[in-house]
Structure formats: structure tokens, C-alpha cells
Length: 392
Ligand SMILES: N=CN[C@@H](CCC(=O)O)C(=O)O
Ligand SMILES: [Zn+2]
Image (tube, rainbow, N blue to C red; front, side, top):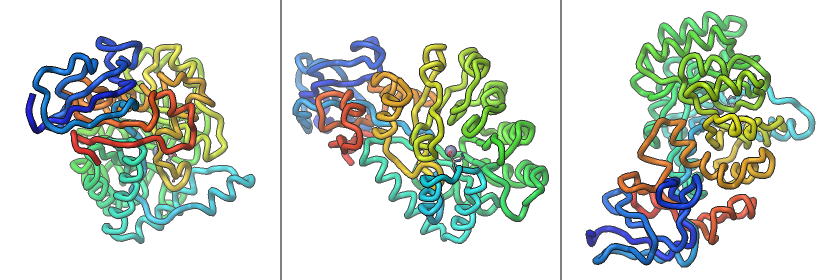
């Protein structure tokens, strides 16, 4: 033990996501402790077995629950303006259409880098306050080489998980010329932006990009060293899921309209299915068949999809409540999907669980059990958050 480490003890329920040390898939330990130091987990176990000589700071959890920080693997936090009026119109009968993205493109292009960064910083802080310790963030509201590049640079100031959403929707100057836009993305945007991103993404959907256009964008991104993820099957049945599996994408996100064949393809492949029930809630859409996917053996992640159009929330606890109440995921499945599932979708092995050597990203609830995340919807339960071993 080291005197600069922190001992968090008196934890009523500790979710480790390590089934070898605790009960069930979540690897739950009761009356537990965690020792963190040098930014990582140094020890996990029962309070009765805290190693001799454990020194340093002590944080008495006081019978509360601790779990890995949420890994929010899908967000669009670089944007200008908002679309509250569009939301209000939708709640009184309008339908969500991909074209609404153009409103945010105009506002984002008009915003300065400093304004975009301040907005994202505010949202990252808001997410952390509800227990999120890792966020992925997409560009996608610039849709010019310059505006996509600066969106990625803004995002990189807040997270390492940056995604070039090169083809989100055809911008106004390319109206009626979708193939010309895709050619520009392939020939100019991806080469200019690839070194600012880890991931390449596309909105494969009616009103956005068809399967061949989506494939062209993703393959160009892959050739530039990026790993694909896909927005697919959000508004309609379509080819997004199959394309994601075909290309070995890390994740296909939304998956609201899936056929049995889509679920079979996901179960047979390596692509994570990321459900975004907040977006379905805020667009009055149906919910994904998460139950069918999990029962078929698909790895399911749960993310918030914070964006100004379909889902302006950063709250993973809200999404867990939706997943449990409306998608028939068990509380354990929902918590796993928002932690280890998110990490799997980002292909990260250092976050999403509390094993020795993993990042010391922890969320402490003002509740005795993680079950309260679904049991007490709408209540701010997060009492403390550690990121890389530092209490935020
Ligand atoms: N569906 C595509 N992109 C976003 C929504 C973008 C918007 O409407 O501004 C999403 O994930 O829901
Ligand atoms: Zn999205």
C-alpha cells in the first residue's frame, strides 16, 4: 500500500463487472472496499480483507453503492444553438426527420471554436455530474472540411474518443447532389480530418445516406486508419445493421428497427448494438428490441446520444430507467450495457469495470444499490464521481 492511495470502504454494493470476484454478470460484492492510486484500481475486495497497512485518504462510502463510471459511447456535443422549437412541434404532432440536422449545421458553422468548446465543456461536466466518466463525441454538424476538422479539434479538447461523422446529412450547398457530397467526403474531408479522429461514422438512413454511399464513406475512413461505427436503423428498417456487420464496425447505434435477420447477423458478428432509448423517447419513436438482441447473444451497449435534435440529455441514469421500464432489460443488463457495454463498443479494455489495473473511474450513488438507478427515475442519485482516481 502507498500513502498517496485512497481507500473507499463501507460500500454496501460494489459493481465490479468482474464475475470472477462477485455475484452475477455484474460481479457484485457486498460490504466491499476499493483501493485506488496512481489513477488506477489497486485492490478490490471485502471490507474485512483490506490489505494490512492500507494508508492514505479514506473515503467512507457510508453504506452506499459504487459502480464503474458510465461509458457514454454515443454523443454529438459539438454544436451551436438548440432546437427546442422543433422538439415542441414534435410533441404536438410533427415527425422527426433527418433534415432537422441542417438547422444545427447552420448554427454550428456560425459559432466560434471557443463557443463550441464552452458548450461541450458544459455538457461533459453535466454528464459527469450524473456519473459519466467517458464520453465519445462525434463531429457532424459542420459538413465542410473546415467545420468538421474544427469540430474534431474542439471535441479532442474534452475526450480522446473522437468520431468523424463525415456524412450526417447532405448540407444545403449540396442539395440534390448527395453523390457529389460523398465524393467530397472521400476525396477531401477524410484525408484532412483522419488524424483528428479515432472513428469514422455515417448516418445510413432514409433522408440521409443510402447503403452504397455509407459504405463508400466508411471504407474511405478505414483506408485512412479509422475504425467504423454506424448510425443505423433509427427511423426505418434498412441496411445499416448489415453494413456495420459486413465491415466489422465496432458498433451500430440506434437499432430501433431490426429484423430477425439483423439480430442474427449481429449475434454472428463482432459488432456491438448500441441502444439509445433517450432518442426514441424524445422523438416518440418505438424502442429497439433489446430483449431480443440480448437473448440472441448480441453485445448491447446503452448510451445517451446527447444532441440538440433527437435527445438533449446527458443522463445515463435516465436512459437506464428507460431501458428497464420500456425495453425490458433487467437492471443488471442496463447497468452492464452503460458501463462494460459502452467500453466494448469503444473497444476499450481499461474502463467499464473495476478490476486491478483498470482506470479508477467510479461513480458513487446516494443509494445502497445500483438497482435504485431504475427504481428511482428522475432522481439525482450520483453523490461522488472519481475520474482517473481524482474526485471530481
Ligand atoms: N440520427 C442521427 N444523428 C443524431 C440526431 C441528429 C440531429 O437530429 O441533430 C442522433 O443520433 O439521433
Ligand atoms: Zn447519433
